Amino acid sequence: MAKRAAEGEVDRLRPGVDDVRAKIQEAIDDPRPSIPAADVFARLRAKLERPKIARDAP
Image (tube, rainbow, N blue to C red; front, side):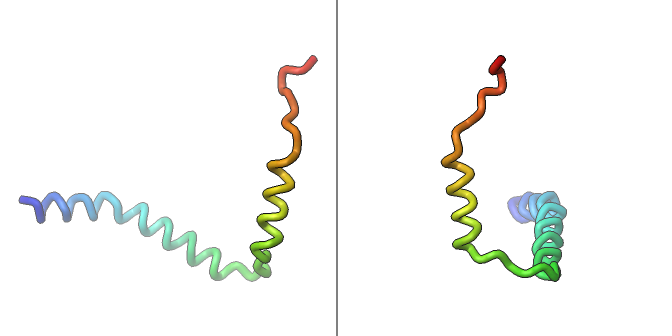
């Protein structure tokens, strides 16, 4: 009984796993150069340090 439940769970999750694998392969195949992690984190820190703009301001 547990084996059947486990197989059902695998079948339920398989499409999601396949989607993730496809996205990973797409990223690997992307010809654009990689962005150094230091640059990514610097941009992220700069974005997080910016003051938030009030959306409801007159």
